[in-house]
Image (cartoon, rainbow, N blue to C red; front, side, top):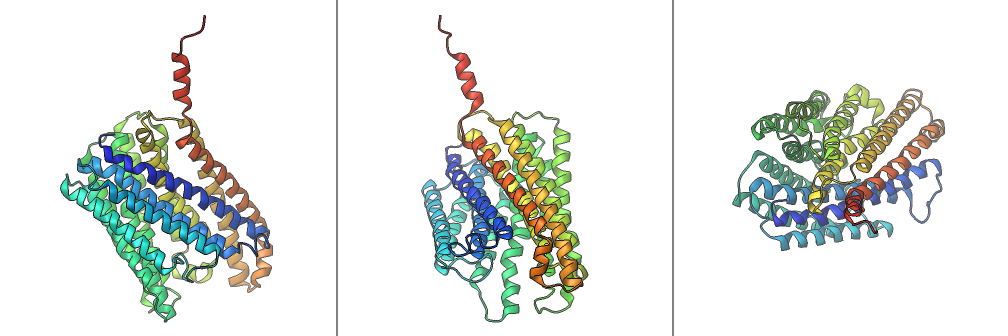
Length: 448
């Protein structure tokens, strides 16, 4: 670690991992309601559990991006972070707003828009924290060396802040509301967040492979171009049934195909660079997460998203468990694995250690990835059956839920295994370092 202010990343990573555990625990509780419908129905209803599950996901991912930015921007810019005090103030405001939102949800204090349920005053605090962050990192980049990695990261972060402002616009017309609602929900995860993903992955590949920066940056240009074009116009596949003109059926279908390309390019990019480098980096766990991220993102955000993005298919499948399958694998592959890859790379340096607990870390990779893959297939099968029974044969919703209850049991089991993998990851990342303890024991003189 070359710069002192890179240590600012550490508290962000701790807060992110704490909320990561909250998110996965809430996910298991939500999955339990599908098989035990009256579970916590009076104390914490399902819609509150789901609210905590999805909001905690978004907040901990953002905390991870903030921490990663504070870690990589000093190295890219060759300059210390502009103001450590602002970074600490930002963290305090952001964490307070997140915790206040969760407590408010438990007391039924929330707005009705899905994923944007935060009360107005909490949205304002989140924007203030985001602006403090952008002020801090933008001045740092302007003072130091300008690289493609830091520039793309800034564009993605500024884009995320700007598009979140549409969360404040809540028109009375439902079609108009949904149209601008997607400008936050879709453009974030399938637009500007892809720029953040590409830049963070580029930084990791530079450090892990040792391949010349110019080669990696050329790939980054291609991925960024594909992401911006496909991400913005690909929003059209959400406009099919909300009252917008019919030309969105064609625009949405066409650009949904193009949305697969940046994720496929990331897979080729990552594996080509690792193959080209031939470098045996000591942090094998970070390499595993860095390679797994684009692969699972390609399948989750790319393939599973494309499967039901064409209007003739989406007419039957929208709002079914097919959507849940796509959402779970896409978020896990593209953004959860990205953050966990960055934490795995950066935490040894932040803790002043060599790469540590790697076997446990890699076990957590396979447990979580296997559980998520199983969950995705389970929800996909459930969605296909649900689509046929409900949208083709016209059976009643509750009767269909009985028919696919086996899939909900399987999903719950996969969720339990995912929690085990998440706990193992946190222990491997933050727990005692077995390698260091063994080395210290060996170094002690033997009693005669």
